[in-house]
Amino acid sequence: AQSVSQHNHHVILSEAASLELGCNYSYGGTVNLFWYVQYPGQHLQLLLKYFSGDPLVKGIKGFEAEFIKSKFSFNLRKPSVQWSDTAEYFCASTNFGNEKLTFGTGTRLTIIP
Amino acid sequence: EAGVVQSPRYKIIEKKQPVAFWCNPISGHNTLYWYLQNLGQGPELLIRYENEEAVDDSQLPKDRFSAERLKGVDSTLKIQPAELGDSAVYLCASSLEAGTGETQYFGPGTRLLVL
Image 1: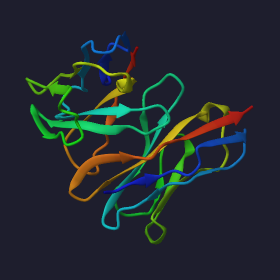
Image 2: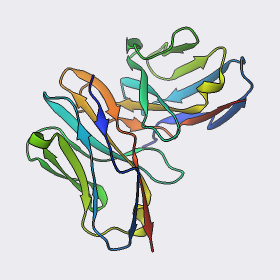
Image 3: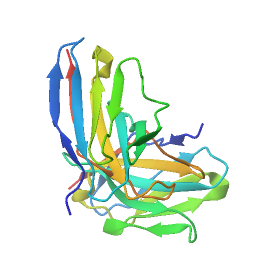
Image 4: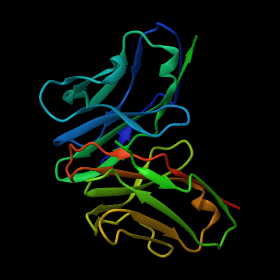
C-alpha cells in the first residue's frame, strides 16, 4: 500500500524566513502528488499538484514544490514566509489506476511576526 | 461558486446513539468522497462515489457505518451505534470526475464528539 511521510510535525519560523517542508512517498510507479493547506478554522484547500511534466510545480501564494523521483520526494518551498502562512500543510498522493488520495500526517507551521 | 457544504458542523452525542452527516458537493461534480480525520492525522478515505455508485468502500467499517448517495448528488454518512473511538472530523470532498490527477475540493467537515 502506498504511504506518504511528513517528518516535520511542527515548524516554527519568523516572518521572511525561507520554508521547506518535507514529503516522501512510497509508491515506485507513476504518482500524482498534492499539497493541501488548512488555515485555522478553514477547510482543506489545494496549494499545488504535480501530475506530469515539469517537476518544479508552482502553486498559489508563492509556494512551489519539486518532484524528485530518485528521492521519492515532493518537498514544499517558499522563499519568504508571511504570518498569514500559519496553517497545517498536508502532502498527499494518488498512484496510477488508484484514485484513492493518501495523506501524510501533516505539518503544523507557525509563523512568528 | 458555492463550495462543498456539510452539516452539521459540530455534533455531540452519547455512545451507542446514532448520528448522521450530510454533504452537498459542488454542482456538477460526479465524484464524492467521505474521509475520516483523527486528531493529529491526515484524512483517510472511507468511501468514494461515482454518481450514485459506491466504487470504493473498502475502508468503511460496515458493521456500524453506512452511506448513501441515492440521486448521485448529495450524500449521507451514518454511524449506528456510535462508539467513543468515532470522535473525529468527518470530511466530505468532491471532484469533477474520477481520476488520479483530479483535484478534490473539501468541505469544512463535521466535528463529532462521542461521550
